[in-house]
Length: 583
Image (cartoon, rainbow, N blue to C red):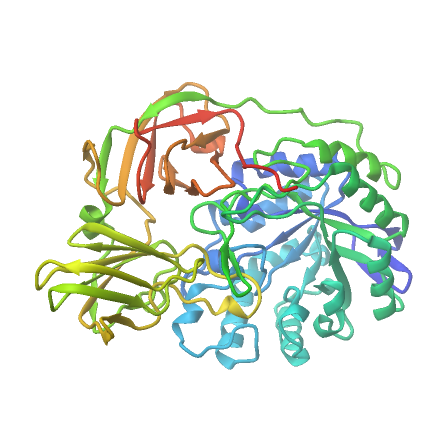
């Protein structure tokens, strides 16, 4: 593959002037059997490069374990990009933001109570160096200097919005270099943060979605020479629970793109194809109020969540054709989808009943956090016996992030971090009554100082003003549901419950699971974790990748935390429902 050069007047590729026309495509948000299709469509829109983050938390789930197989086979993704004739901008972090759980930082870092993330804390730097060592060894052959597709590698991510420790960035750059990264390094920041996040001697780039000429002029002021690159050209946005679905007009976005390309600058669309926060991997923001991100990462991108071209695909392709050759071939307009009405979920088991097969309880004087339990995602089930009868005021000093409270198995209330709720009152019928608190990790904060986001019940638990002692903490990561003893569904389940049903198909294809009438929970197809649903919206369907289905009998499992649909049915439709559009 050609080598990228950074000159005073721009990029060169093997000595020839070169403009980077790139699009964000996160391999970890796309089913691996769809990677080839999405990469091909990137080329057909006129792109010559794709960009991807690397999620440290998925690749290194424990300090002594490293994964790079299946949907995390980054070398395979890079090889597919190269086969399609695409270059790659690699963004390995360690912090990536990306509206991803914890900004990609592994939760086990937070088991140390006073660790300082994204800093020169020796504990953090040692973990980062180990991560880079494990990650980069199999990627060296994919660097452009060794014939691979990786043109350039990013150092950290929008660090100027978080700190200004140049020595920290220098350590990361040195760590990358010492592990064989000999392609150009670069930083990216929002325009106001350029000086804080840039590193002398490295290419500085800017992130923005409008006023292209103004922001590029600011970048030129900060860097009088060198290439101009918008590393994140925001052509859409992400959604949060309780908000509306955010879209951006295709014509307006195309005009902004035209303005950017007219300056001679390079660009990376954020996103070309957003994909999905499968399982529990959505992040959250906390600017004085905690706001978790939804499951879909559609992002109103040129390819929608199912990989079908949108209006923006054609509009951007037309603009790109003014500045660079575009293939004559067009992608198919829309792939066929699977549909099935009213699949009945006829088997159930209460979560409180099934909890012992999902995780082992740990006894302690106080509730343990997820990080203390060695748990990454999912739920924790806390239990304690109450010492007295009569009126009770329960105070949970810190709810991370949503607590359902039960007394002797009966629901008594919900406390939400998002609503700044901490207290409940109820009457205790007998001494020794069991208080149960089911806490959901709704996504660790992925931006700003709130990334030190420990989950569960990190603060004190008070009962009538006194600390409540004598707890068990049971991790429920829900990584597998195979051992749950399902039975005939009760007429009216009380509290959270798993519901299971089956359906058949002779034509596996992409589809969208609709849970009309259900309240809140998670869903799985054939053991594959689709993500979260919530009647709060805006998202009201879950994307199901076609490769998850199989010919013949398929299984659907829904964890409903409150009240299921009256008929206890779900529907598979050909189109999604991402909710009302933001004005």
